[in-house]
Image (cartoon, rainbow, N blue to C red; front, side, top):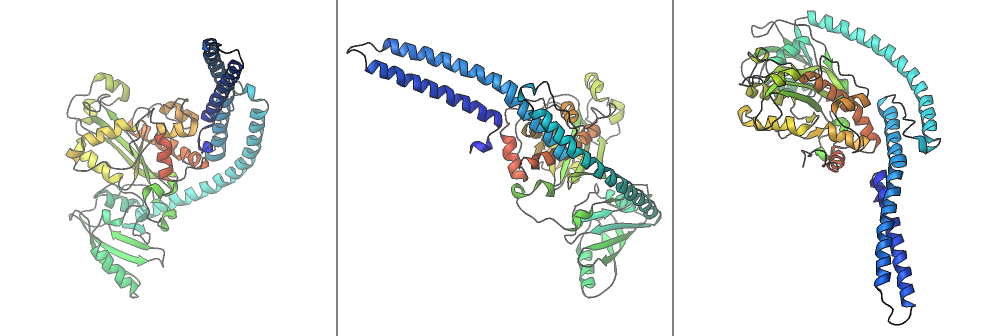
Length: 470
């Protein structure tokens, strides 16, 4: 049981035990001395001596514990966090030699070991970066080629979830709802004709043509379906329909790790790596959940431990009231910016679809989630998503006594927030997402590898913020 407690708490309990044992021994010695005294010897002086000893002994133990905690336990905890950053997130954080000055050769030895390991890792990383650059160039050529072909391409895994979509498919999906990887195709289209087409493929047809209709009943698309063995299906839509918008260059969005659909299980038992996360942020007219309104909303998506490039939500929101100059000074959103923006009902519904079947992530989440839940009646949705707060994640990884502001956390994780993006909804959402990507392996390194284990860990730090999963 004690092994589940933090080092600093175990040290504190050790000194409590020492103080209690000393007091017990003193009480026993005084009782023995009194019992060996003359008959009728008053016990008052012995009790007074015990009380004085217990008071002084407790104060002495507390003072020694404070010194030990500040100069030994805290530096060991920080050194452990530094090593985890290097081992799991690739962050080359310098060891604070001044803070670790009483740890003897431990800090220099840990630094030397990590530098030796990093040298080998950096060599491998350079080779990987070279190969990644080559693959990126090929992906860009493929994207450009697909953009010129008037066919929208969607790749589905066996669970009929979207694994890949090109620029044209992104435009088609955007007419219905924000496009997103791992989304069931049923979120966008009526699957009745698709199911019939799959039945024909199973009967031996090489390729099936049919008409696909979106879930709103407003768009119809000529479609072709081809099986990819047991790995899924390729769906092609003709974008030369009157309903189709003009084609705009967009990245080819894909994640082939999604070809193998993850096993469906209770979220508490789901590995963190199998979850979809949506880090988001809001900018508002003020700091009151009960009185203020959202003026800007930004979000990104994290799948398989990385941010999905090309899946971004960034919108102004018309709050239906003037924006106070003091708020504009912070986030730079003006009344002119939001004049033609959607209201919170429209923007909120779009965000709700963007975050469907995902874990919401925010820094100081009770404020942002509180605003969304306040307007959920207007949106016609329920914000009952699982929620993670990067303030609490930081406390789990780095300890409750450290500072956990977004700027400090990003600096600790070597996540750069461009000055012009700080205090913008999308900029802060991207920073939160990048911080989350680096926090996940640190949490797994501490043995916290499921959502249930993570919520248990964050609930221990309720003194910082309320955990919204309770």
